[in-house]
Length: 342
Ligand SMILES: [Mg+2]
Image (cartoon, rainbow, N blue to C red; front, side):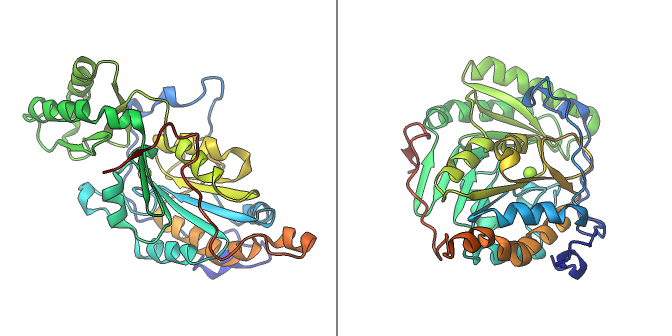
């Protein structure tokens, strides 16, 4: 981390997140937007602890056991502060720099895992080897792009629903419908608060009536996502990516929203999961407050963290267990019948 005290090697620092003043203005706490179906009902979630220097020994131990590190990063609210106009979202300079450092680090594979379409998110942050767009429904993998076949089949119906929503929601000011080809987003951030319940109700009605069994609505931070009714999310994308990397790879995931919870669960105790934001309940292991704090975590990973990866195994075997260009294999069989993205 650029905060020198946070990168100290003696583990005494407690300032990983303590100096954060935050750049994010989003304080969305709409309780009706919490997806209670997204968490196991038997597990009462708690807010994860703030990632402070107190946890550095744990992070060091995890990284020292790794032969390789997979860093998966959400975009909006994680690398980029949430803004009213989604087209204006951009990573902070510190995050851009930190991601570039990780991309260049030998024992690291970096992936962006976003709700945005691949085409969109790839223009906003350059460099990572792997991109998962549309909540993991499309994967860019070296020179290969694969689209989930069921989502691909339902794109035409999604387009119809988005067009209907344009008409139905037209009388409501500042509502924006975004067709991302495999999923759609109804943006309500700039909609007057009094009109938001109407937007949600009308969206659900249109999707229920014209999406049939093929499409469903799920909530996010001041958005409604419309997507195929399939059991596939960011966590599945993380599993697919992890499965192609060397044994001993430790995955790390940072994200800020409800849809990132499946990725936190995919990481489980094998790696490091970090939720960005206030003290929302989450399955993540840690939390940081803002994209500014994310940059400090990534900066630390790119320096002190990367130096630890493979260390213990090398001491045992006397050999390096990663190479300069770890091969990322073809789309694994778990992905059902990849469809080339024309
Ligand atoms: Mg996000």
